[in-house]
Image 1 (cartoon, one colour):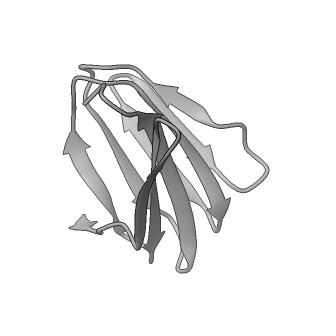
Image 2: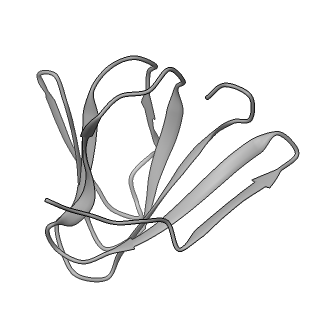
Image 3: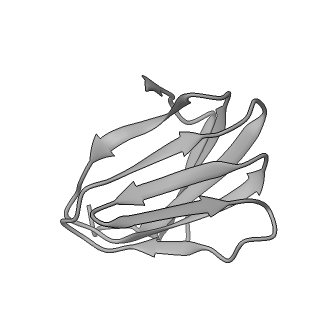
Length: 92
């Protein structure tokens, strides 16, 4: 999977928001971190994979919470996918 970087990354009132624009096959390869975060898909379709779990998301999907210290990956399943990650400042 080809890694994408956020096109927007900002902090507001204690929350950090990272916005990604990805084409099919791009995303965030398997990783983990010491903070939880929520992921939401705003356009297109993306997949979240973590141990024994596979979820496909669209703009109609509820956000998915990814807990701290568990591996996960996010992948765009079609061109023009937009997804966001949000997490609490100071929880990195």
